[in-house]
Length: 259
Ligand code: SF4
Image 1 (tube, helix red, strand yellow):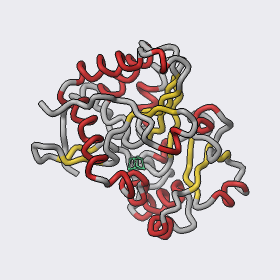
Image 2 (image 1 turned 45 degrees about the vertical axis):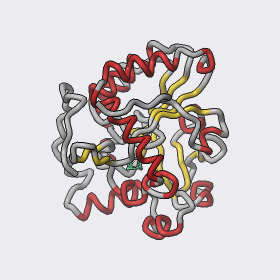
Image 3 (image 1 turned 90 degrees about the horizontal axis):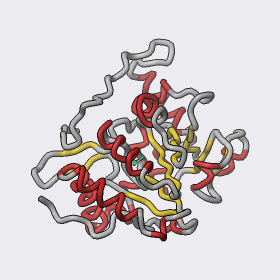
Image 4 (image 1 turned 120 degrees about the vertical axis):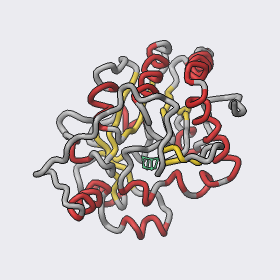
């Protein structure tokens, strides 16, 4: 059994802390586990993984990476213990009226893990939770139908299931090259506060992080446009929907797979 984190929620992310937002984080995209296997934490990531903010900068500091892997391992090795610990931590009076972003990085990697979060949220009715996710089918089958009133989900584009996103039915966020392009698009920037992504007008837009080599890679495309280019190049198109991946409802929380 790996070392357990002492605190599960933090205000380590400066942008979120500015608005008093607490966050929970697991590694972005995938993590190498102590047994040598690779565990995918963002199974629906598409083009976003090529410019992922959480795979550069401070996220790569060894101590930061190790802390995020410790969080993930807790959920994998002792899911019930993790759920109890998270629920207990959230019962502290400082979380009453507070906002928690689930996943400063990472995503709902399994149905069991998503359901654990739904129980935690229901047990903490005085705290508001929100999460960006690219797991569109998991969202439609579990997260949204079972959503507690104190939770908001935002479907973020740039994932392998973008083709199933419906602007009328989903709360959607796209990543634009710049704020200027957001201004001319009719979408709604969350630059003032990440809370706007959850509680402001939709559809939601955010500008790409100011990391030059990642900006160059994205070019002048939105994530949604870039993902469409990739899908088309692979012969996938919205006119010819691919068979939906079955969501592994009974997927064991601890299962691992290779990248
Ligand atoms: S889903 Fe988010 S955290 Fe995961 S690879 Fe994409 S941008 Fe990074």
